Length: 408
Ligand code: NAD
Image (cartoon, rainbow, N blue to C red; front, side, top):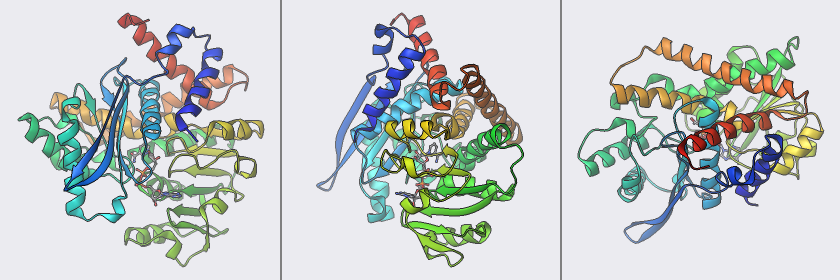
């Protein structure tokens, strides 16, 4: 199953809805630059990519993923979504993504550092604060960003903290980055509830994926009184119809255990969990979780995509036919890149901004972006999905930038 083909199908719909000509559309169908090579560490080979999808609005921007299933199709799709996400969020970036195909759970810290530094040794000519700016993604974190920054600065011979975001504060990162994606997702989920479920009490939530995005999101919803009935990680899920004790479960997960070892609920598989009865389903793991095979069994009326691409194109159509509302990835998880933008701007100007000011700015941006998407959705009288509304806004801004550049 090609994720990128799904994107092309979605673009075809947007072309019709947005009345976009073929020559304009052509510019969106191919990435601007694909870099691929095999990182060689003592004879062991690691396939690695850095793909810039668009440079229309600004330099490349997007995370680096470490996972055994990383492929060119996946990195290209993630880079495409970054281009749309940055455009929708109104921040001055194109879109990019990187990845290395290996299982990070099978290497020790020394090997992880070697692989991370080798990635930069190979790709550094294409990176930089005004060329392409990486960040963390699945199984990469502040430590990995630190090694990468250090290696980059060794190569170029000067300090350039703005070449990467998601760094620890000691290296020019900002405190907000840790839970930014979850905070953004939480803010749009509250907007969703205000619009679609204003009077509902005891809202039930299920969260797939209990890492950076999913865990913090669960914590925020729990603090607000939502009833979290199931969560999962790569090992499986844990379910309690009366609601899980989230504070306890988070402490347990942080001790390094899988949620399935937690005693406060029933162990279920990830696929069983997706089909449970709930109000909101938060997808915060990986792509292709809801497909044409399980879409018809989804009971949640509202889906929030904190992960990138968790619902396939075919599944989208089935869910829409069943009146399910999806808050799409390029809106729901954009808090991460918006705060990355704050970090980058701070690194470039040298000005340090107060955390409270940045938190307010993030809130204003997320709610403003939700508003643009929702208002357009309403203006179509329910004839488009929220995803189509986000794509229309994002694609039009990229094409306007390309037109000013004279490429159209
Ligand atoms: P992470 O590595 O911190 O966590 C991933 C979580 O998903 C882990 O708990 C892992 O056990 C779980 N998982 C893996 N495979 C699973 C499966 N098959 N079923 C259920 N759970 C599974 O990663 P993250 O940063 O939280 O990223 C999660 C998703 O959010 C990704 O799609 C990522 O691209 C997206 N995202 C993250 C950020 C961010 O700032 N962290 C920003 C935007 C988008």
